[in-house]
Length: 292
Length: 188
Ligand code: SF4
Ligand code: SF4
Ligand code: SF4
Ligand code: SF4
Image (cartoon, rainbow over all chains, first blue to last red; front, side, top):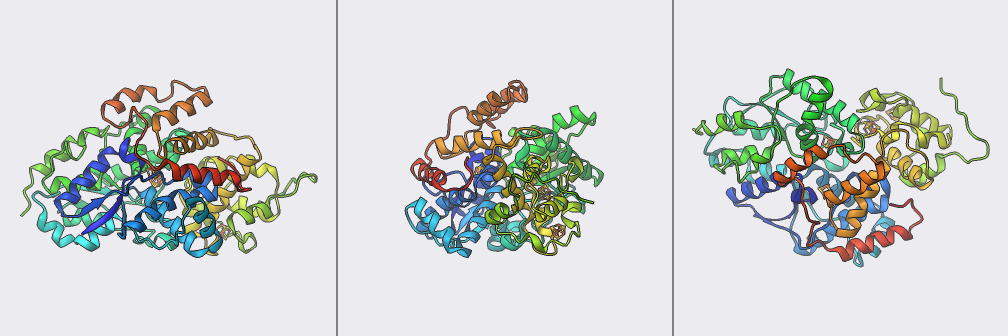
């Protein structure tokens, strides 16, 4: 199966590990990911906070490129996924917006490219059964708190992604690979998102409560699918410890890294060494578990 | 009880907000669900339902300087839970856009500066260039040392790219930013 894969800017910096593990998992599962040539930033939070026109046009530049490829767009970054879908929605719903965007892009774009999150591809096109069959080792004995954050599930009327208050797609993948996904109250809480640099105080406060909930639930690690959540919970963990006097040491792992491990991809290729809070205990557990 | 101290000289924000985000402020019946789910309300003086009420009563500039709009993480919980289907998060966007356009002061942190630095790198390179953006942001805040202790590790781990991104279609992005400037809307 072929898809147009939009990596997102963080794939080239803070989320190189997410990008690497996405490519590795796709390779192992025979999913062909083609990057749209010349793809550009979706504008992220700064875009929609600043200007409604930028918020729609920046994603649309990429959607138009994918339209020419005649493929579905697949995204793994929750933030990009969100912006792409919202832009599509606004362009399709409002002729004036479509016209404005068309003028800036110097071509018409109608909002019709299908945008899918990589998780949807894994669950619907590959399927948990095939995934389990392809697995060489399992997550048995690993307690995983699956963290969805905001941008994957909200706004629910536009994203139509899973249950917005109690999503389960990450949990289903973890369970399919033999892991124990935990019931915990933090799944769709907000970590502070794009405020990491500009309001570090807010991010420390919100992210600390997420770490706390996961630890209370007995998690060995938190699984994520958004580079901003990953950075806030992982890179900021030492700031959180410094400022609260706590001593959190909980690895924040991309779901594609966990899946890749089970598929037999080496930890280096999956970017495990890039995690700030080391995942050595998780790695030991998983690699010692042959999948039956 | 909410009392509005409206400066008689300045027009209220109600119309401008409705224009920007196409939200019908009048259907809010103050159930306060938006506030109870708000990620940051525990940290702010004013909560989303109060912003909604004040706007409906046509509050003025003081709302553009309220701490909520620059603490809001755009998590979307308020919009998702509003029983009247009001996109409260879009109202927050509209207030930020107006605050930037009208040069309102920012009570805490410096999100506008961050957003400008972010979009500047996008306009220049077509993609985010974190190091360039962080540099511009830090020069603006004067807090040069915050977070720099993390840079060596991040560079070593390949979590920060030393060089600006390449290969992006800068022509299209350039056109988009040019069009944005021509629109009457608030600017980057
Ligand atoms: S959300 Fe972030 S990573 Fe995704 S394209 Fe936009 S800026 Fe880049
Ligand atoms: S959890 Fe945090 S970073 Fe992740 S999607 Fe939400 S605000 Fe964004
Ligand atoms: S949830 Fe909706 S109706 Fe209730 S107070 Fe907030 S905006 Fe008003
Ligand atoms: S979007 Fe902003 S105002 Fe709405 S719940 Fe989230 S933080 Fe609060």
